[in-house]
Length: 282
Image (cartoon, rainbow, N blue to C red; front, side):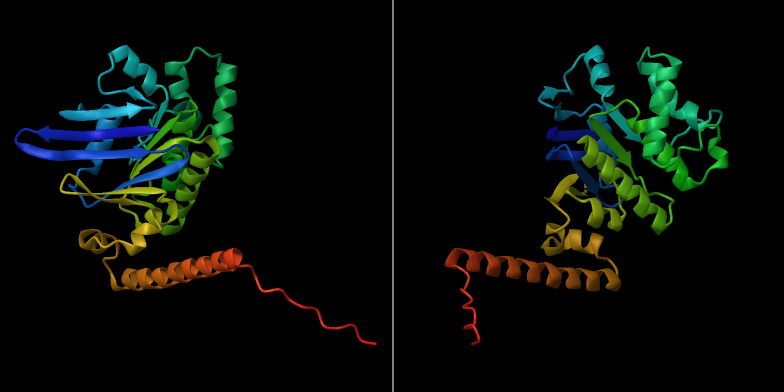
């Protein structure tokens, strides 16, 4: 679990993050959304320690990361996986070497053990035949999957993804979304995703923070976002006529589900009517 309490960050005279709090649970995809300049990337950098907040606390499983000593922070960082927006692979290294890089840096395992682990995570992201390929030889979607493999190779408790679908076509984006969701649920990772991709919001939004002008404007999940009364959020999420129509259809669908659930609950409470079988024919 990651808890952020009253995070504040300024650069000179400009306040970029103002009094933001949230609780992000393991086994869930926790999304931070908002327009460019809303503060979502700065908030994530405060969470992983790339920026030091001017106020507030970042807490990992009850331990205050903000006020830890450097060696203590290093131990927490070993439990963090990071998927960068541009994948950030080393061009001069093969796929295998890129994924093995964190193992060489943070463990003293043998090459054989490290290679076994690399092959396990490459198989997990469906790239088991790409060990000796270089980044220039694979597609953008494959690079993202290599980035995910590298991010999870140390069995992290926490996974941070910065715009994982950036530059990808819609079909490949859906593959990446499903992969992040499946890994999150299978390993019970606390996953934090910065995104402006609305498909990601509706597919993976177990918990969502909407940032506006450095503040948390709204929080909820992918079902609750359909019924949001925040005009700013609605203008951001459902900007086109097509998405507005899709929202209306989803609202009708969800309202129907709720109505059916209430009817079933009422029948259960009151007792379902007893069906009397017809008399036996002579």
